[in-house]
Length: 353
Image 1 (cartoon, rainbow, N blue to C red):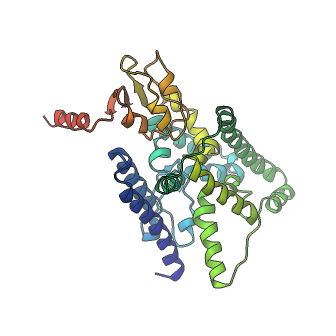
Image 2 (cartoon, rainbow, N blue to C red; image 1 turned 180 degrees about the vertical axis):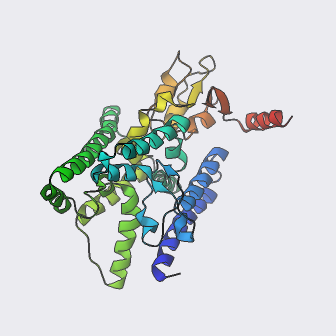
Image 3 (cartoon, rainbow, N blue to C red; image 1 turned 90 degrees about the vertical axis):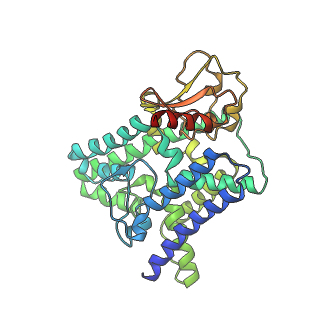
């Protein structure tokens, strides 16, 4: 294996090791659900970037922020970021072939319709990194710093505005480039690198955290540092992501994830939903206090059984923490998880018989 490949493989292994170590160190602090989710996130991180270890590219496109450049230099990635391909299709004149963007958008929507935003909570590498920084804060004994309710609501709208601007820019680049080649050249100057093809990648933590920062560290170590255009912005985004995720659970997911903004549009229509037995709920607030996305609807709802929120990432913390066992995860109307391990064992025993 070439030296560069070894570096990338080591980088992914180190992050996975940190996750496992943190889970082991905090075993007494974490429930069985937390341990299970951490294990799934580590496995997803390895599988999504399996090209490092020789796994072939699959035909499955997933709505997760997983940068193809992490392994693209050394072979095909195992899974490709669906949103990355969508913006690339829109900005490279492929929008003229309407079927391509529609197919990509259809695949994104299909996943959200099937499993809601559970990919955000259980498989997205950026979400995984966010959870690790949050876990680090817990290990050192610091409390989170939540924004005020008004600020929280205002910041939530940022990701929707970002989604609109990113798609609008991608369409404008593709349309004007097709009509005028001089404009296409101007876009390449104004949006250096792959920015004119994939504008969202300029601000996405995935390529900045897993590609830009390790590349910079390696070049600095070897004395061959050559910072790319917009390096200052990449540094700013990296430190904002790290510090924000350290003090605020799912900081990027809450306020800036454009892909999450897209998925939130289909949360209430998904086959996977969060259900509440209103008669059992005592409105104790345990679900709201433990929610990484700071959702209050689950606690406050007094009539409707479907308490799925457009902001919910299906981490299931509320289900697992509910003292009355009033919450459950359902798929197509059938129970999947009710929080109590005894209920799960009973469910499996019933299926076996």
